[in-house]
Image 1: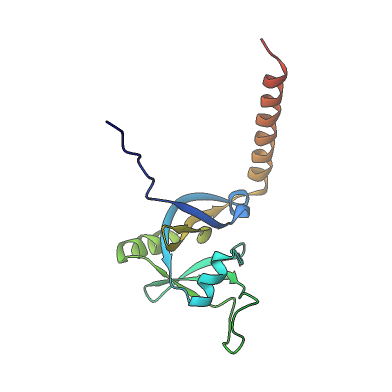
Image 2 (image 1 turned 135 degrees about the vertical axis):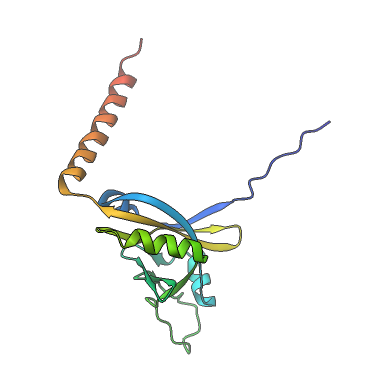
Length: 161
């Protein structure tokens, strides 16, 4: 008998990653949310014309919004429509997640930022994180630690037993 192949149902195609966040902040918690998008935005996301480096999440009147994300329209799009690349986009979260986010953000020094944007099957999802800022000495320590790990791996490869 042949064994059946197990196909990964969570096929994640990454559109954009906010790498700067991992250097600037401590990530306390990560949450997956859906996005409300227009048709031209979906086409631009498929072409990876997006920048989430300065984006953050605002909770207003019980709903979460993505601010600061830039989705540039495609050159081949219709020009009679009015495109706003920096419009606020609504996030799709349930009430429990919204209450949890609101309670955690009210702590001193915590904020919500966009970590990555990706496709999950045919849906566009955004990974948001509750973060706290790092101090300058924390960043220096992390750089020093990363360089030491790289040097250690180099030494281990060069010495063969």
